[in-house]
Length: 448
Image (cartoon, rainbow, N blue to C red):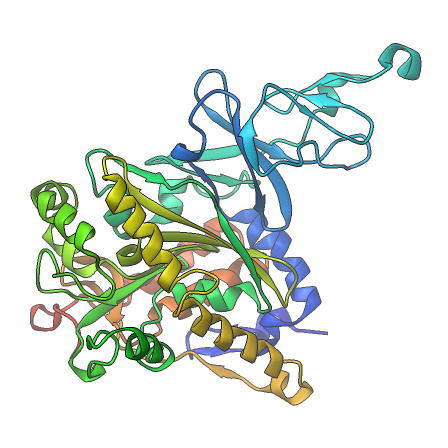
């Protein structure tokens, strides 16, 4: 039996690798981690009119997210209450009702049971429709057009749940006057690894980039994009409340076109510089642009305009869902450029995405070994050198090459897994953060 209390020691930067492989741990995290966290459901642009819906997942539970007649958005389990069949088989669309194809029970846009075939004859008038509607997601938050849901009444309100991460999320979600939209379609693929490898890495791991991703730019461009001397790179990493953000610091308001930045993006940004700075400020324009994760499994790469969810599929597999996001007032040429850039870099066949997938699947393969699972992983980079509010960035931060975000991720995961209440988690987190020193002005701009 796995001792849950021994799996993570964030104060020492230690992780037991059985958190990535043990079936019992996985089943518990479905209930205690995913069941008590805010999970990404949809973006406004995916639900353009009444009856618009998408089918997604909250961990392994299929849910329908539906635009209501009053303009609000609701979500409910995509499961018929009769024999458990999905009540909708389509990924997305527009509908007035959802009908199970097994026995024909039908549900409205809110998930209420509205029709049962042969009801009078089969149930003799004894079926209480109100009691047999689809299981509804009780809490949904709309944050700048991004919809998140939770099954838990105990979980803090979404903005409290975000905490300091709101500053980093707003760097993309609140960047333009016109707002954002997702381009049409969802790219999906499967990777044979545990979901935590991906979610943790996207929360701020810039340490791997010059090693794992060295071959892409070498093959495709002469520009020294990833191959530059890491010792000369400045950047910061944020880690708080399980969330993480990390990236390099760019000295210019608008970087020139390069391997990662197309001509259309450069020109559009140039035209909107004053607007962007007025909305998010110079600090975020230059310092918040790379890896990000909202705990537990919603991630994005700001400079590559891609967002994704790491849907767990057992302890040894994830299903990745990704979207490109664009400014609503972007030209068609810019939208095409952003989509093509994502396909070239972070897609199932992207030059960098395949590097990450190779790493994660290799680690998962190694963990098939008995001795490999008895080892301990080191997550202590930068331990003891955390600062608060460094260089205009709120929350607990560290050098870009650190694991402050990873330790925070596993601390939050472990606190939820062992069943701590949210009140206890918040109290302990506040005490921990208050003990971390404020940043000194001369150290505020990044790498030492």
